[in-house]
Length: 251
Length: 254
Image 1: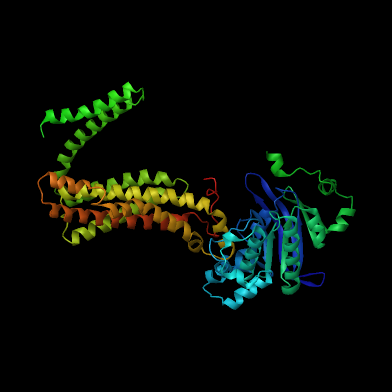
Image 2: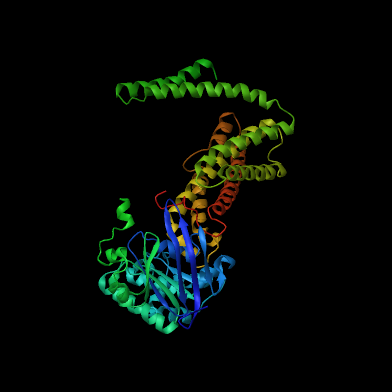
């Protein structure tokens, strides 16, 4: 139940997902309380599918996922999804005010959150309280991503799954969101799984990294150490930018 | 109406065929065949109706109306092929809409359980319910695909299938009710409905025609409303798995 002295929060054991082809093949890893795990891999590697399986938006074909030692299939699905918050690559917000979007999670559970709580959630993601009444249609992509983050934080999740949260942002906005994620992690100590295809971003997070390609785990460890090792030819291919993504292969 | 008069009115169709021929619109063959088909269909219907209207046994009337609901359900269900059990859903909506409307009209003394009333009014109720059911299914499929990202975001935040699909359901019911609502808004201003026109032509007083027309309009509005709600509320549930996942058939490209 412990990883390096920390309590294990999430255990992924030999999970496989098959659609038209094998999307995930016997993927296993663990996530400790308050840890950031970076999931790195080329496009089409199965990173998003893996996050969707953790949140049970997709069902596994085999294997198990345990949250605090309990199989996630044993949880009521709505409770599990509140505990494992998922932030999508492209946030699909409700075409309404920022406040309405931030409050949506608790409202779905029949709770109301006060203006003060809403403002404090916005300040956590670096947005001022004046944003409460703004329509989300008027926000930039970076701001929309922050509203999506505040939306998930309103549910007070134990784990945050971030699916390429910066992929649609410009370089300045990328750094702002990365800093925000780091500071949120420092403040809240919430366990996070961050998906990226960007090697530089993975290096900037400098956290334990899981490299995924063709639905398989290629390697796991500190990104800098993984880059120094020459053990796996596929891994070297990926680090050198020579690995063709599955999406490109398909086309 | 004399047969000669009827034949003369067909002259209008002949005129349209000649215009098509003269302007090389290539519609003449289709116009001729469809007008011929309509004539044959209506003559056959006349014979069949004469036989049906002679039926006095309420059970047989019910069976005829039930078979009309089955056919309407099968046709409407095709509009929702992507939704599991769409035929049953369409049938249930059309049947419920028709039964409730008939029940209320009978209880209010507007109609009697006689073939003369039940068959033509049944045809109207079932036909309108079928249209409403088809529109509901078609729009629901479109909305679920179009709103997939939003629905999955809500599911990921802990929404139930009802909460996640609420917007799509609203859109589907709203769209399916548009023809009925617009007809009610414009009746008497833009168009004079068939029943009212027929009643006046047959020599009835305009106020009696209005009363009949109002009863028919309420009947159609009630039937389409019940059908839309029943079909949409039954259909959206089929679009989610027991793990509250939106089934894969509904993609934004649908």
